[in-house]
Every structure is written in structure tokens, then in C-alpha cells.
Image 1 (cartoon, rainbow, N blue to C red):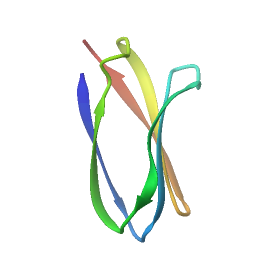
Image 2 (cartoon, rainbow, N blue to C red; image 1 turned 45 degrees about the vertical axis):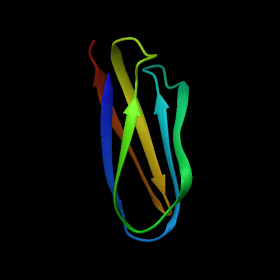
Image 3 (cartoon, one colour; image 1 turned 135 degrees about the vertical axis):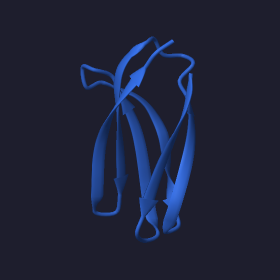
Length: 73
């Protein structure tokens, strides 16, 4: 159970990627570092999680997005 999350950031800055369960509880901080502008890929290992619906939140500069993810085993 591994997935790749791809994203583009328009300018250099702090990037956070957080994983939440269906109840809105934060499960993990996947990424929290300064990244350069451009395309990025993050490989995420979800081996420790049960099958179900999860959300990941990407925050970069003045941008924030939350996406749904379905984990099937």
C-alpha cells in the first residue's frame, strides 16, 4: 500500500502534507519542509493503515487543498 502524491508549487516556500482519518483526526505529518518552485512527487507508504477513506491536506504559501484518498488492501 504505497501511493505517489504529485503537486506543483508556484514559488519557493514551506510545504506541508498531512494525513487525516475520516473523523478528521491527524494521523501523520508526511512532509514539512521548504521546497523549490515546480513539480514534485512524494511517495507515501501507508503500510501501517487499515483499509478505508483518508484525507490529505497540502499547504504551500497561500495555497491549501484537501483531497480524499481511498486505501484498499
